[in-house]
Length: 231
Ligand SMILES: [Zn+2]
Image 1 (cartoon, rainbow, N blue to C red):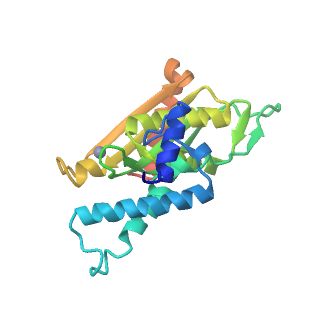
Image 2 (cartoon, helix red, strand yellow):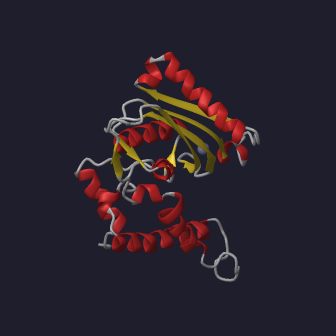
Image 3 (cartoon, rainbow, N blue to C red):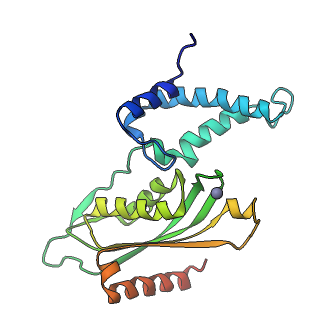
């Protein structure tokens, strides 16, 4: 009987524990540095097989030598790193003194993601709005959290939900809005090959959903940011 590879062992473990491991799920509790190295080795072998099946000469084509390992490393360390890395640590600061900030906060974050259907790039920007609750996190942390959610195989609709949930978790805010504008490689490089396809998704929670003036202020803020940095 052939020995099981580590990916197989981990998949069985996750199934047994009822842990979902879809392309957009974070499975960092099962991954250590040592495990990741081993998984990259196994994925390298698998990508070698894919290249062979595509009839690409890995032996004499200098551009294709090492491609399997580059792909394996890219998936684990870059384009899908948000599946394997734990949440970025977002130190929070209390926002409960007399001069606490009670206004709306809107942060614009660049997004680089990948669609889980075709593994094509999704490029865009997320506008994250919150009404500050009892704690605040550093401004760069909003982008770190958004990137961590984006560096997986995602659907834009799911990504907006994931970012809203994680921002709410990190800040304690229940009033959260996320608006994403992105272009999709799967529409630009294949399929309908539409180069101007722009997809917009919105997730509104709490006051962003229920209070018309908060909702309007959020979209007015986005408009101001877009005028400042047009996309
Ligand atoms: Zn796609």
